[in-house]
Amino acid sequence: MSLIKIENLTFAYPGSFDNVFENANVQLDSDWKLGFVGRNGRGKTTLLRLLLGEFEYRGRIVSSVDFEYFPYEIGDRSQMTLDALAAVCPAAQEWEIVREVSLLDVDPEGLYRPFDTLSNGEQTKALLAALFLNPNRFLLIDEPTNHLDMAARETVADYLNRKKGFILVSHDRAFLDACVDHILSINKADIEVRQCNFSVWLENFENQQKLETEQNEILRKDIKRLKQAARRTADWSDKVERSKIGAGDKGRVGHMAAKMMQRSKNLQNRQMKAVEEKSKLLKNVEYDEQLKIHPLNYHSARLAELYQVSVTYDRKAVNRPVSFTVNSGERIFLTGKNGSGKSSLLKLFFDESVTYEGTVAKGSGLIVSVIPQDTSALAGSVDDYAAERKIDRVLFKAILQKLGFRRIQFEKDMREYSAGQKKKVYIAASLCDRAHLYVWDEPLNYIDIYSRRQIEKLITAYQPTMLLVEHDKAFQQAVATKVIEL
Image (cartoon, rainbow, N blue to C red; front, side, top):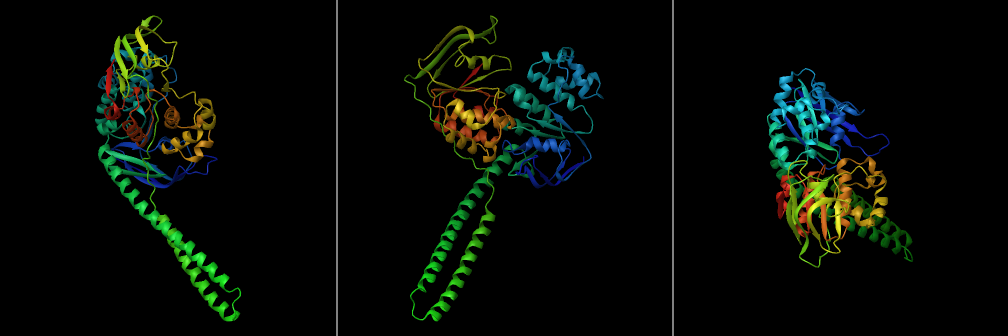
């Protein structure tokens, strides 16, 4: 056991006047299993990179352990998997690597195949196993679940629960609950740590946010009242000053007016000082602002029907034959292991080039709004993107702000956005669309917990017709009306 101390940490990216961290302090134990949460773009990955020594900063970071970052980059992805993992953990014996990957439900035979022949999920699990074989390392695990299906997430969570000495950045609530004993959180450039599982932290956090929101409302009413009183005092002073005009005894009236003016100025100063003091008491609350969507009503209760459908590539089926209907108001989740054809089936609803076997009947005039899985195409400004998508620019930005964007982010090129911010661009654009059917492919990849809850509440309130692929178990349980297993 050793301590990791962060003292008076202040950091801003070059050219930015906006501090990511400002005099932040926290102390961590290297034996803890830490879940790291916070809004997208608030500095989670930045803090990990600061711990790795990649940036200059003000303050101190003191640690007697070395840090190791996940995901680890594999240079030659065509090399044998065992060789790739040996480069990650050079001190480990072959039998140790075999043991660890077996614990993560990776077939040991895969160690003797080229690394790039493994699925994304297998690669993720194999690299995690290798990293935990390095002695005296504190692991910085950044978003490991994004290539894992629901079953694989449960396997990795069980594996991490047996380990210790890591910071885990994840937004999957069930995953965090299963494998961490402390929560490290970022809120408005502040860092704090609490010893608890995620559900307890979230309950406490929500209760605290509710209390602080209520306190803020009381303070805002007081501030408004004091400002109005200050304005009335200023108006009264002006009236006193004007009363001197035309008065008979100029000296006496002037003397009395001066005394009254001084008293009113003193009163006004006290009122404005009270405004300033009360403003300092306002809490930085992570508002869970309500999102809205306005789906179109379809002329029929049934929007689409699939019968014994398999998507094909080069005449080979990528999924088992599947049959289901899409009815108005349903939220249908496609689930299954990685590679079972979930994303391919989604494409049937918006990509005419997809080939398939079986029968697909889609209603005429069906308008579909899509969130793709890949965000790499995003570039340029949000204004240009709104114009390209032909959506309301003001509404688009308002939704992004409700999802945690700050105004300064609208001035940046979207290529500079974090992975979560890019995904929010697609989510906000889809919420601007008026569509009969919303087809979302892993919409919550990289999305913070606060925004996930906002999206859950939106779907529950408005009940749009949706077809989704998403591996967040808590999200699926909250909004799904039908689950199709592939």
